[in-house]
Image (cartoon, rainbow, N blue to C red; front, side, top):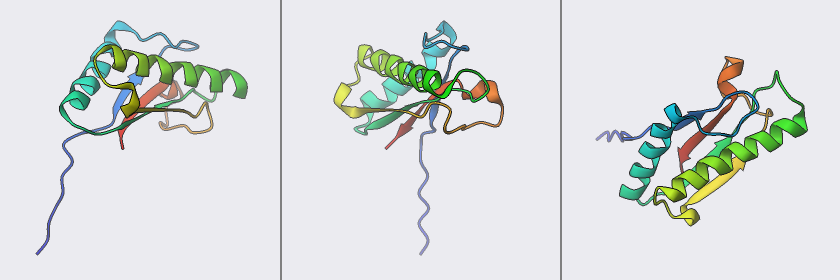
Length: 112
């Protein structure tokens, strides 16, 4: 007997402008969808901030990725997600999740 488990979710991505931790209006829906999913499912979430490698120094990119992760967490909490279910991490430019540099100005929300 083979049992196949299919996840009904995907990681959610919130993109940012260069040198910014402000959530653009067109990215609000991504956070809203994550919040709605979390309110309907009892699962913790990891909110991970990143920065692109081609701009800024290591220190600047660490700070901006932290600010981005915290901005998404704050918005999730405002949308009704309990803060104790959200873990924030920031990787600066030490990890580049996407091949295209500009796409690495991002926060990725991952279910734990």
